[in-house]
Image (cartoon, rainbow, N blue to C red; front, side, top):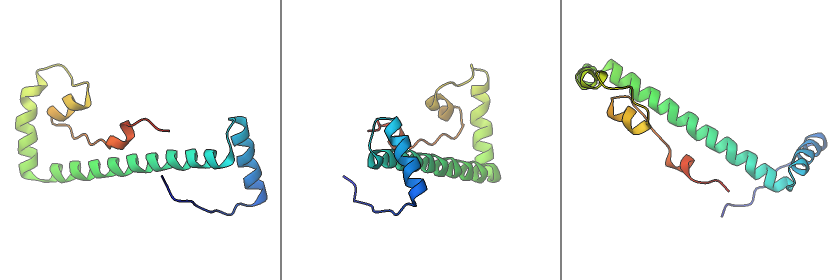
Length: 106
C-alpha cells in the first residue's frame, strides 16, 4: 500500500476535479490516484523509450554493433516481417518492455 499524500488545491481546481470524479462515480481521492497512476505509467514508458533510443544510438555508433546487426539481420530479411516484440528482438530490433505496464491496473 502507498503512503498518504496531502496536497493543497485552489477552490476552482478542486471543484473541477470533484466534478470530474463525480461524473465517473468515484471520490476525489480515487480520481486523483487514478490520474497519478496513469501519469506514472506514461512517464515510465517515456523513460523506457528514451533508454531504447540511447541503446540504439550507441549500437548505431559502434562498429561492432553495426557489424553484428548487419550480419544477423541479413538472414532475417528473407523471412516475413516480424510481428511480435519477441520476433522483433530476434530480428535485431531493440525492444525494451517494462513488465509493470503489462500488469492489470487497479
